[in-house]
Image (cartoon, rainbow, N blue to C red; front, side):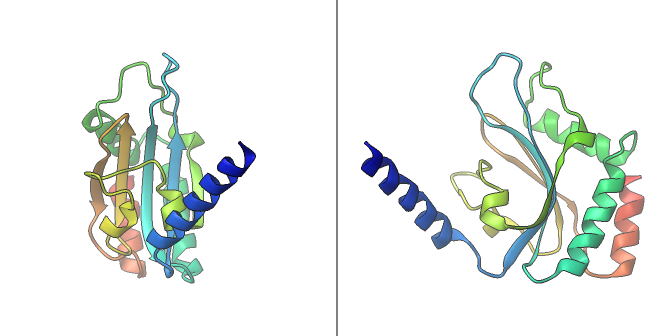
Length: 166
């Protein structure tokens, strides 16, 4: 049994490496939620930006904006509620955006694990670099929405994103 489990783990690691884009990382916020019924379905929300895995400067700026927006009572909270409606979240699923965890330069495939778009397991392939996306899943399918369609790699775009989320 241990041998079979070991082979399975190695296979999963190999598969994730095959699909991983070597130069991509993810910056953003994500939450794994629980359904009060105790069902074992995937319930997640994420606000993510795909960046080059060496771009720590822009990742920090993106996270600063999202962390500030995480305080709530703003447009960011409204966007989160809208993605929940689109993903058909049940009314008993509680969302507290202040408890979303940070994704700092995390490998793209790992950060989006559990999200699936129309049978595509590697959601990162569907993301344009330096654009802000919202993802929501309650069971299936994943709902994807491009929230900010400008490149988050300059001060003007960062300022515009701040204003969008206020």
